[in-house]
Structure formats: structure tokens, C-alpha cells
Length: 447
Image 1 (tube, rainbow, N blue to C red):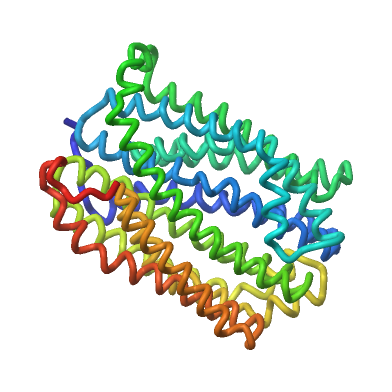
Image 2: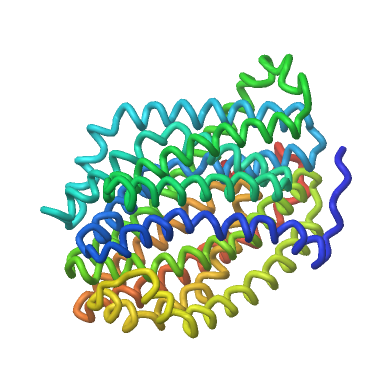
């Protein structure tokens, strides 16, 4: 059995801060992409990257279960003291991620036109978006492999290794973006290619870090454990539910992006700029949610209900406080940040008018992000799936109802979606708590 890390505010923050710093660099991929194109002053190119990002997020993050499922299952194996299963999880995750990435790359000619057909683009907008998407697809196997590696590292609480992985990937991305776009003039396609190359660099570095953590010969003799039917069945069951959850949320955010596209290039570009601020806050707050995933998973692995409740409370305190701080920061610093991101005066004016709504997202969204972490750590896939599907359907209804309000209605509906999601997971929380401490075979099945 592993020795549990003490559950104190200090230990929570010590585990969370590398994730927070690393997560800050995750949306910086999108931020760098946006700034590099935005500083050219071309609203159509900026909107094209925004539309292309929506397409890539939908297709790539449909496989985000590779990160989330790996974290919860690795943490539970760690909590139960099953070191062989911890090692086997790494190989399963990498094989699954890389294999799915190869399939995704092979199917791009079928998938990309289908997704574009669902979005309100056209003309120069689609041309710029297609160049970006085409470049990003070269990194599909690496991107999905990195999902699995990150999940495994976070499940073990190896937050500093995860931080190093994210920083390295984003530094490579920034350098290549500047060279390919400003140096070679490749435009949106150059942005996509730069990010793809950065993802391959991250995959290689992540494998190196994982092997250093495990030590020499740690992966030898795992073939029987690797293909254990019960373990594989549970892996696919958990991941299937989380995949449905992820797709539902991607539909939600894709609908939001498409609603901006219906209003024109300037509103779409303005929304994209504001969503960079939202993404930074969400990813940083995920530092506490990811810490919750690890701590909740370990608590469930040990059957420790009291530990689960304490981990939820402590990470919740940090999440809500950080959400309020980010809301204030975006409200105060948003206008100069908008001006720094884009030179286009129309985009600046539109984004500034909607800034107060973007500032509210970190505060309103904090409970949903925290509860995501709790249920992911518990590998409670069905609860995650049900809450996300319900929230997405309610969001679509709210957006349609508020459509006469234009951009204002779009943002109000988005804020409401976070409340819907938090309510759905909150209703499922008591049942999850009651299940902890029961023998695994008797606990209510979530996957």
C-alpha cells in the first residue's frame, strides 16, 4: 500500500501550483496562435483560426477521456497500492491514444468537411480555417498520446513533471508560430503546423519523463497485465461515458462559436479573443480540479470516505477563491489585454462591450469545474455523462430563447450552462459519497 499524502491546505496547494502554472500554458497555445495572427490585423484570418480551433477542439477533445479516464484510474491504482497496474496503465493509455490519433489522421478527409458543413463559415473564412486544421492534423497521434501521458502523470500526483511537459510544448509552439507566420508568411496554416510540431516534441519528452519515473526495466513482463480483460473492459466503459460527456460539452462550445459566426466575422473574432481569457482562467482553476481528481481517486482506492469529503472541501475552498480572483482580474485588466491581442478596431470595440460577461465565467463556472474533478477522480462516468448531456440540452434551449438579444443572449446562455452542469453533478454527489468504502463489487456501478 502507498502512504497517503496528508490532506492539508498546504499539501493541496503544493500539489496544485505546478498544475496551475502548467495549465496556464495550455491555453497559451491558443493565445499565441491568436496573437500571432491577430497582430497581422487581418480579421478574416483571425476569425478563420477561431473557426479552425473550434473544429480541432471538437475532433481532438472528443478523445479527452484519454486524459480524464487515465487520471482517475491511475490514482485509484496508486491509492490501492497496485504498482503493476500503475505501470500497465501507462502502456494502455499510450497505445490507445497513439492508435486513435492515427485513425483520426487517416479519417480527416471525411471528418473535416462534415464538421465544416455544420458551421456557419464560408469564403475566405473557410479557406483560412482549412489551412489551420490541415496543419493541426499532422499532430493528431501525438496530441492524443500527450492526453494519456498527462492523465497518468496527474493521477500519480507528478505535477512538476506535467508542468515541464506543458512548458516545453508551449515554448516550441510559440517559437514555431512566430517563425512560420511572421517569418515565412504561412498564415493560418503555419499556426497549425507549429502547434502540431510542438505536440510531437511533447510526446517524446513525456515518454522520457515517464520512463525516468518508473526506472529501468519497469515495463518488462507486463504483457499479461496489459491485456487483462477486466481492466480493458473497465477502461473502455469509463472512457465511453466520459467521451459522451466530452462530446456534449464540445457541442455546447461549438454551438457558442457557431452563434458568433452567424453574427459575422467581427463578433466571431471578438468572442474568440474573450474566450482566450476564459480559457486561461478555466485551465488555471483546473489546477485545483486536477488535484481533486488525484486525491479523490486515491481516497476511493483506499475506501476512505472521510478523506474524500475533506479533499472535496479543501479543493473547493481554493477553487471558489481563485474563481473570484480571476473574475476581478479579467474585469480590471480586460480592455488593455484586448488591445494587446488584436489591432482591429471593430473587434476591440465588440470585445470590450462583452467583457463583463466573460469576467463572470470564472466565478460562475468554478463549482462545475471542481465537481468535474471530483467525479473524474471517482471514474463516475455515468454521472459526468448525464450532467453534461442535460446541461448541453438546457443550454441550447436557453440560447434559442435568448437569440433575439444577439451577442448578449449568447453570453447569458453560456453562463447559465455552467450552472446547469454544476446542478447536475451536485445532485449526484451524495450517491457518490455513500458508495465510498463499500467493496468494489458492491459499490454502485458508474462505469
